[in-house]
Amino acid sequence: MELKINGLTKRYGNKLALKEFSYTFTPGIYGILGANGAGKSTLMNLITDNVKRDEGEILWEGTDILSLGAAFRALVGYMPQEQGMYGDYSARAFLRYMAQVKGLPRKAARGQIEELLELVNLTDAAHRRVGGFSGGMRQRVMLAQALLGDPKVLILDEPTAGLDPKERLRLRHYISNLSQDRIVFLSTHIVSDIESIAKDVLLMKEGTLVTHGTPEALIKKAKGKDLEDVYMFWLGAD
Ligand SMILES: Nc1ncnc2c1ncn2[C@@H]1O[C@H](COP(=O)(O)OP(=O)(O)O)[C@@H](O)[C@H]1O
Ligand SMILES: [Mg+2]
Image (cartoon, rainbow, N blue to C red; front, side, top):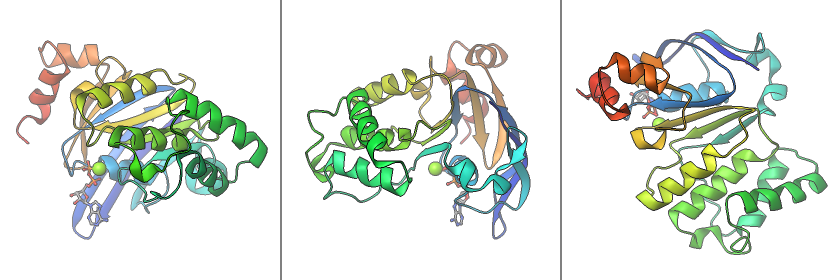
């Protein structure tokens, strides 16, 4: 299983949001670390095909995702940075709605939704309105919807944004427990979100991939003691 990106570039007017990004992703969790405006969401929007690229290619098992179209999108689960406004749905109804949007067979979806509610520990609250949920509960619903259809590529755009430390820890726990048989993208500007769960960390700044590697290799290279030092070493001036 391989997602290979070559020279991916995206401009907004004169602004280079992503500059010649190249990387090869295989199953595991990738931490995409960078300050606001670094290009994390742009990269994710290009992989989910929500945004048109200017240059480069994104190859799934060797074929560009633009030629794969819906066949690739069916393999992707996406948790966007902006939360959808589905406050009047119950958690279960929201997941059923999202399963329908994704075109999952109704019967299989029902069973899967119960499993996912269980996974994110929301079974007891599943009948309650999402609008009345805490931020952490809402993010768990959003994680569950991203997992519908058992995606091979899971894109989580700042899943812990706005969460308190306890809720953040909890969400990280669910993410780290996911099946390893998929490629997971996890963007954040909080180092502790990816510490101990990311196989590789990618540090981004102003649309550029400034460095990458296993946490151990990065710590060594920055002559630091933890990822916090790595962040400061490369992005500290931000
Ligand atoms: N729709 C857009 N229109 C214009 N500029 C954008 C748009 N989306 C992102 N940008 C710009 O592209 C750069 C990268 O943004 P983004 O990918 O959202 O960064 P991040 O997710 O790391 O905070 C920023 O300078 C941002 O202002
Ligand atoms: Mg973003």
